[in-house]
Structure formats: C-alpha cells, structure tokens
Image (cartoon, rainbow, N blue to C red; front, side):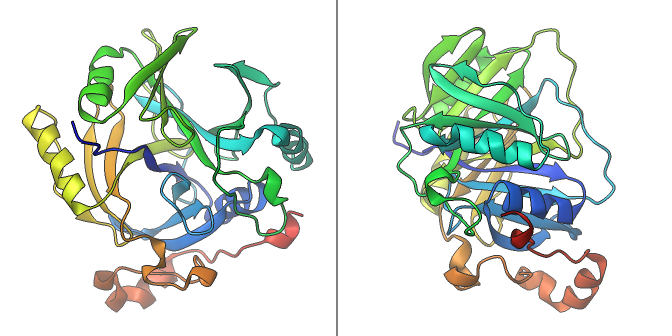
Length: 316
C-alpha cells in the first residue's frame, strides 16, 4: 500500500473558559496561537489552534472552548492522554515550571525506555511531556521559555479501549501504521516510530465509557499529503466497511471523519494549505479569522464570543 498516512496532524479537545484555555497553552506550555477562528459546526464557539511557529502538522493542539461546560470524565472509547515531545535535558525545567504555576505533576515515570511526566490542564485534560533525543523539530517560544527547552510538537496519543484487535487492524492494514512494541499492557504503533506519529492503545476491558465534555479529547486527526491522497484513503476505508464522511473544507486543511472500532473519532486531514493563507506568518493568531460563509455574520458572531487576549507577560 502506498503511503497515505504519515502520522498525527492535530488533536482537538473540548475546553471550558476560553481565556483560561489561551493562558494555559500559550502562557504555561508556551505554544503559539496560530489561529483564532470559530467552530465551523457551532459558530458561537471559538476554535483555537496552538502549535509551533507555523502550525506545522504534527504540532497543533486545538480546542473548542465552551465557557461554563462541566468537566468530562476519562474512560474507554477515548483518547485519554496527549503526549508532547520535549528535549531530554528539559524535563527538570518543565517540572519546575509547572510547579511554579501550581500545576500538579506525577513523579518522573519511564515508558519504553523514555522518561516522562503526566499532568492535567485546568479542565482536566490529560497531558504528558516525553523527554527524548529523537526529535529534530524546532520548538516555538514567545521568549518566556528558552527555545532549547520548548515543546517540539506531539509525541503521540493514548487510546483507552476495551479491545484492540479491530483498531489494530484499521491502523496496520489501512493507515500505514505498524506494531512497534508492547509494555505492561500498552501496545505501541507508529508509521515510522518517531515523535509525532506514535499511537498507543491501552486496554481497559472492564472500564467505564468516557464522558465527553471539558477536559476531554473530541477527535484525533491523522496526516495525509493532499486532496489526492485523502481521496485514496477515503475510498480505501469505505471499500472496507468504514462509515466515512464526505470531504469537509476547514479552510486550513480538508477533512474526512469516521469512528474507529473502539469509538474514538478519527479524522484524516490534509497537510495543505496550512495556516498562512489568510494571515501573514509573523502575525498568525492575532485576529479572529472567519470562513467566507461566516463573514456576513461577523458582527453577530463577535458579539457572542468572549474577548480573549494573550497574556504572555504574566508567564515569564
């Protein structure tokens, strides 16, 4: 099979208060806000994109912040932990930084020979920082975090499932993934086995179904190069019995969606065209950008959205 999938494109979570969401991911974690737009399916709600300098595929964590939303619960049928990649020598820096902003963390843990810490954001979103020397990507900094310690992008994601066989079949037969290793009931898969393409399955056969709301992942998107490769993977999935949506234009990429057998919502998103199509690279994320169909309603939309600001100076 030709290479249709090359790793993780983005991961999207549901959040609560929009300003707290911006403060956590730009201020504490130091990601760049590369796009401030709306949820195309719910225009009264923001859609924030946080990533590296240009919002490169494999670095972008996105959120739908519903102010006042109750917290969800982690469980089966969900992506429970999003893992970011950090340089090996930066683990101590991040433990100190998170403690400074009163974010409780786990002790240093080890998995597949790599050290990491685990914590939650203000909504309960599960996050891991995995220290490794395999990531050549350059991290973004607003100047508040030394670039040599900055987050590089995604490391991978953990799917919490009651069974793995059908999901494993999907990943390995149709999505260019291969089995890498197993450790303590955690099964690891990757396209190349590098930061940015890792998917782990953790089995929880008796676990309770997760409840989606603030602090839980809405979906994980996988990378495909362009419209042509997306059409190929769409056809391949449909031919093999998966219920795949039509192509949806998300302005900065095109998307198709389907649920994997364990219940997690999967998306296949194109690398093209990227986030610089409607803003200069130096000013990504500064203005509220709307799709063309929403522009006639800008005044109404803006009136319903809470004002948010970057408060980087508060997170030195």
